[in-house]
Image 1 (cartoon, rainbow, N blue to C red):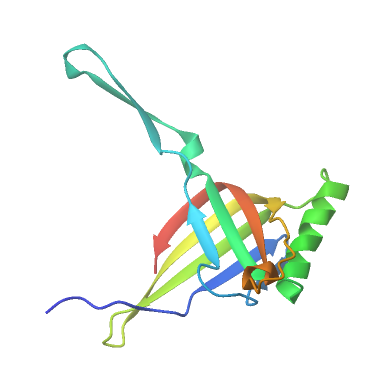
Image 2: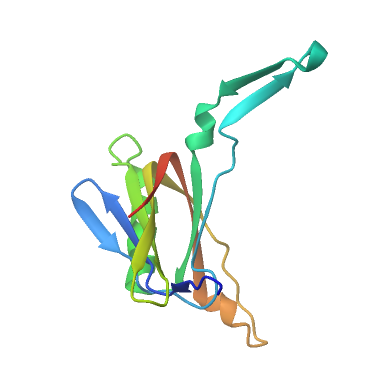
Length: 155
């Protein structure tokens, strides 16, 4: 018999110092995407298939894209963080994030894959659109957050 995986109870929590917020104002589709833009190591191949592997600290970096409903409390929170950084970059407290991917096996057992991200900043907001043809995406705000360090654990 095959394996079964049930999902749907994921959470995304942003922290800034002692302040934390679990995001909830999500639209349809992918509401959070986490990607690792860099490899964990670099490789060089020499004569006679000699190989050198070197740790690449850039491999710890994480890019996160969040999509929230425009004008929602989460949108206002994220926008305020970006505005604070632009107005006070040296006083800004870097963000951390916990993305908890909850998985069930169909037998009542639950595991979580937890992405912990540290040293983050909102890099940009999405563009806005005014569409008279009924495009619902104009009611979605997107934020790009980059983190300098990350860990992935199973619980």
